[in-house]
Length: 127
Image (cartoon, rainbow, N blue to C red; front, side):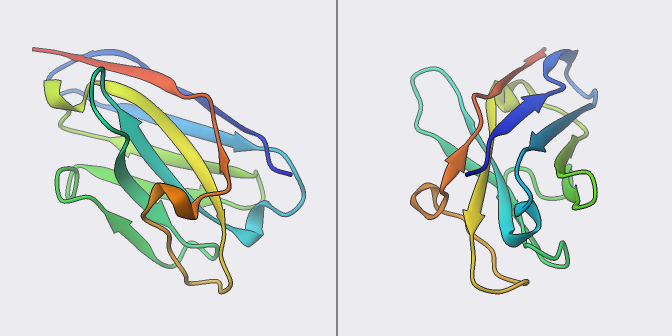
């Protein structure tokens, strides 16, 4: 069982930056690939970024590539999402998720591949 708690959301002006954190409970955190998804009002949940169990492999949605960076610290059971050059269209509730993958370099990009989800943190980007 893994419990995930996100933090770091808030309100920021367009062009600004925010850093999100996701703290995980459980001793097996390092065995899970992690991902960030977001959901805006009236829209479906959207993939943002993923990182492998080892941290050596990452993948981003085209809409955030070059602006967002996902990272993890397995010693602290935490995954991060650094968001720069934020745009109003980045406004959403951001969720982290954990996926029990088979290998250290495997990634998961689809919601159904994830086993555990956090409650989310609101990010609002004003124009």
